[in-house]
Length: 74
Image (cartoon, rainbow, N blue to C red; front, top):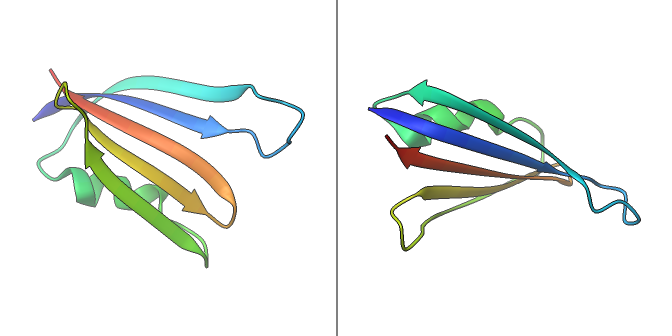
């Protein structure tokens, strides 16, 4: 299945509210397996949800770095 991936990396600096945002088109048959590439480190937290529009959202924290990955089927 083809998805639009929006990946946000939140800035660790408390005075800076900017974040990096990357958008790309990906193809995968298993979104959980796809997201595993971002789960690196020793302290890993990952929560998966589906929003009202059907996008699959992964909220990830790895060693204090927060990311959000939203996958929307195209």
